[in-house]
Image 1: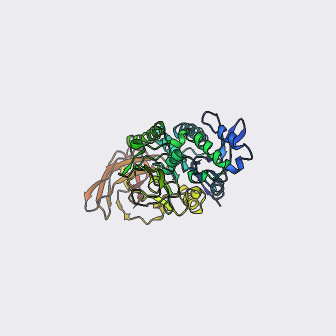
Image 2 (image 1 turned 90 degrees about the vertical axis):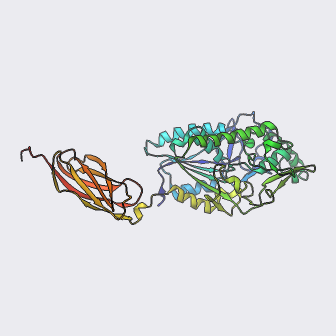
Image 3 (image 1 turned 120 degrees about the horizontal axis):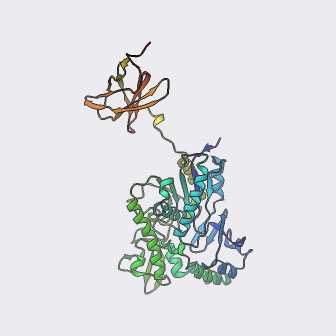
Length: 450
């Protein structure tokens, strides 16, 4: 039997990972090879120009790539795993395709609208539901902007980012500076010419500008510098400024918002040679798989350290795997980890309580009389409260906090609000595991007739 998930789960793909249509006809769907059967290369490049209105239709299931920039193994296996191992039969698994040419900020607005609509619908079934975001690559940037800048954090339960370039990726800088697949383009004939044109079109995408590295990545021989400081040939200053402003807005919002009401789960790769920086000198521009002489590696696309949000001090929280960027979202280890995250539950119920209480209170009191409630424990640092339930009416009563007297003793005086039989319980007011203790008290009215 599949485990049931009560939250709304939203899946966000990475760049290139959504089918784009124009008037109902697919412009981008699956791989370049498959698309060639739909549109000739020149028409494909023209159709992807940023000023052409396109509609996102669905997530791409198979392999999709832009040589020299990004490649992804599709989301068919991820979606099949989620639907096969978890119970989403009630309609709480939502796919979010988007126009990946546009700014992540623009797509975050659409995401916010989609989540508001879908969560309103879903809360008719599960009123206390919140939102879990499962994001691959650039999808994590969209979700972070939605949560922290647009306020989506208020309904979020968890954010999962898989290979997200939280600090950008030097590979994007190489693609913008040198074009797509620069080392192979010259020998590819007409396909190389097509890549030249596609690279020109791609260089105007705001989304690609937001993939540019915000960390020090340009090695000029006298140290490492940011793109803002020194730039690179072929990358317009407007592209760098746009990318920096996008990431800065997220960081400033996080700092202003304070403690997150949702949990964050990071996935990344750490074993593969990855473009970490870019050399720029008299000989030109060249990608480097080192950073200041070090080689922390990554997933083949996103550096190990860039898969970590800039507000984090280290990468201890990242779940690293041996998979490369293209297959991180379709890899079995990732799927198993997502299952555990989405079905996470409190463990206190499975643990033996650390503290046992001894309770002393009277069996019988009169209406208006204070009941002296005394408790003994082995620890005098507990925070305890007293509660009651009226046996006949099920009325609940919240009594006072018990005062610590030292040596593990606690005391409170309380007046029960009505006559009758009360079940009085003392329990912890914090998450410290304490076994609650109860007893029964009868409250009588001496003036009443019996």
